[in-house]
Length: 231
Image 1 (cartoon, rainbow, N blue to C red):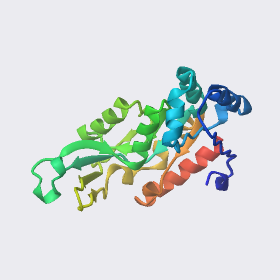
Image 2 (spheres, one colour):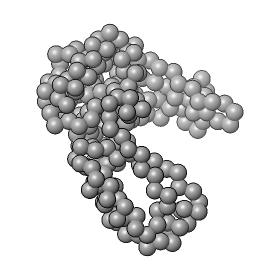
Image 3 (cartoon, rainbow, N blue to C red):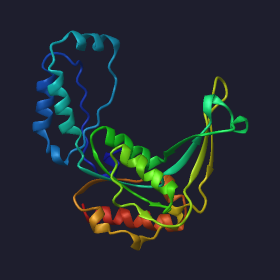
């Protein structure tokens, strides 16, 4: 998938995480320009390998530091909508609920939060209303270490989605109420693109965002062009 977008990729599949694994990671680091690399760590460790790993004499602290060096992607930009999430308590259905659990979420926002927890430097780009709901979304992102310096304020509505958590044979359900939300009123000239992509190493965007409306599509396309221009 990465190669289809012109990215150089290498699959590394060590058979067992046993003695010498620390040196193995060091050799990987020395083989690549780590400051320009993205290291994606996958699973696939069987029970037997797990037991072998626990019994081996590995310098785990050094391995953790090596992983941090390998996965450091620098400045990451994510663009998308963050919404107010209202979840039903105790597996209740929406029509049974008299109250909801409040949180915030959204495709790119969730990615930014996850990457931040893995030690990356993230900047979220979006538009939020200049009211307490917009303030709450920013507080949520900041609490997870996501930088919101590039968030612009305007309009009066935040996207909302209702989450009904499934139970047993009943699947989870989501109802969206995001029409005319602040991000659908976004404009290209509201952002300093040179500042946003200065020293950036990665840009994340999803198909959900470009489906939100013509204005959002124009901003997303501009962002892609700016990302390419800045390398």
